Image (cartoon, rainbow, N blue to C red; front, side, top):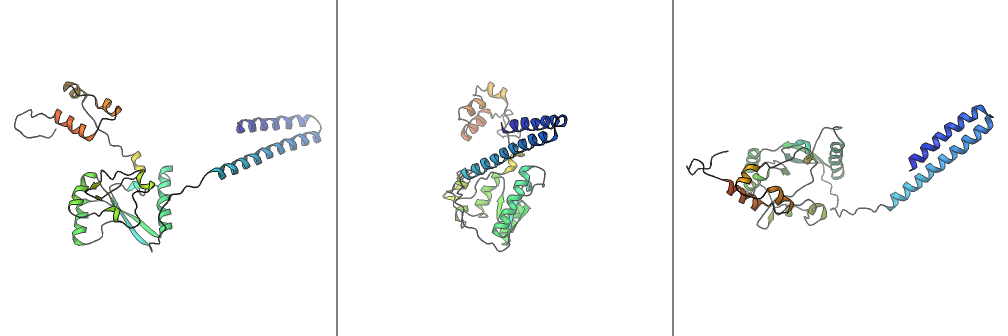
Length: 250
C-alpha cells in the first residue's frame, strides 16, 4: 500500500513540475517543496514503524552451553559429502549461510574446522593404531553397527556439554534409530545438503496388485507404512523361482 501511494506521489511531483514550467516559477517551487515534505514525512513514518516492529520481536533463548575457548583446536569432520560443510561460495544463499555458520563457529570457539573424506577402512586402521581420525563422523547408517561392535565410536551423551534433551537437539533427533542398549551413538541434524541428496524407494505396482497387497501410497496416507510393514511386503514378494533354495540377486 505504501509503495502504491509513493508511486502516485512521485507521479504528482512530475505533473506539478511540468505545470510549473508553464506558470510562475515561484509557484512551481512551492508545490514541489510541499510535495517533497510529504515524501519525507512518509519516509520518517515508515522508519518509525520499522523501529517499532523491531522492538516487538522477542529475543530467542537458545539455552546453549557457555562458549569455550578451544585454543585453536583443529576440529576434523569426516563425511562423504564435503558440500555439507564447505560448499562453493556464492553458489546459492544456502551455501553462503553454511559458510558463514562455519566461520562463526570458528571465530566464536577459537577453533579450525577441517574436512576429510570418510573412509571406513581408514577409520578402522586409525582406531587400531591409536591415531586421530576425526572428531565427528557423518557416515551411512549401515556402517554404524560395525563401528559400535568394534568400539570405534563413543556414547555421544557422555560428551561434555552435550545435553540431548535440549530443544536444539530434540527438534532433529532420531536417537531411537541410533541407540544400542542404553547408549546413543548418533543424532540427526538439519543438513542443507538434503536439497541435493534425496533418497527414494521404488516399487513394482504390478507385483503389488498380483500379490493382493495394499498400495504403499495408501499405507503412507494412513500412517501405516512402517519398517515392519516393509519387511512383510518384502517376504511376500520373495519367490524361489528356480527352486535352488538360494536368494539370487535381482
